[in-house]
Image (cartoon, rainbow, N blue to C red; front, side, top):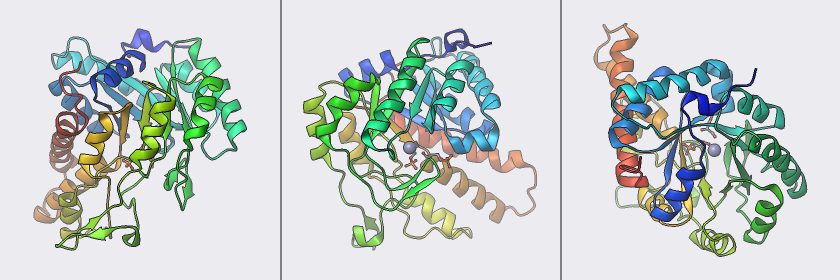
Length: 332
Ligand code: G3H
Ligand code: 13P
Ligand code: ZN
């Protein structure tokens, strides 16, 4: 039997996005695959009183099981309340839904929002698929994110070598014909910890890679065409160089890892960008903490001894994102 997210204490993105666009901030969309990541996200957002979108990717569904993750999100609402957050603003969202069936299954099992990623399809096929998902999801007040333009890196297990920026001329047609609630666009962000090749970057005096700026001109054109319409940025990890250095110091081998500078994300939050996706930074924070402990304390073999501190590091990073980058702290 279908379960409504409303019964689980979750919310969809309608109110969140309305307030975020008006208030000039963005809602964090953090991916999770396991208990420690979820605990870190929920405790960080409860402490900061930040609305939050919990994202489940296709990789997470394969790794941890969609049903189990859904129950964990339900538990997250109760956990948030236990932490003193009276009215948690938590959305459960399918990240990069590849087809109608996956989106339907998530709507039926208690997700409050889904993304249908038809970005690699021809324009009219993307519209037809997205519209089909919207028609199904809206019956249950589940919100839908669509995507136009392709990000470089991994999307839905498909690796795109080059990004394909969103064409501003297409956005009105896409939004009006599909009925989506938000639109993910491509303006130079990409997935993973290596967002740009060294050739695309310059270097500062310490040899650190400086990435090319985001295409704010495209974002502005889109905003003119769709005033106030919720825009989403994927691939928005900043790839903190302290984590990269710590991973490499303790036996890792991350080469030329580079992300989106936080100042650029902060600038984006002032526009209609109201959802910012961050996954890789969480992976880096956890890995950096775990590597350090396992190298410095080789006698440790209780996973709580390294996953516990990793969870603390993650929480710190998430609080920083809410407070200093997205501006979502105090908005829930
Ligand atoms: O969109 C990409 C996310 O970072 C999820 O990646 O499929 O490896 O979990 P994943
Ligand atoms: P990052 O790899 O930059 O964290 O992007 C995550 C993302 O867009 C999830 O959909
Ligand atoms: Zn993404």
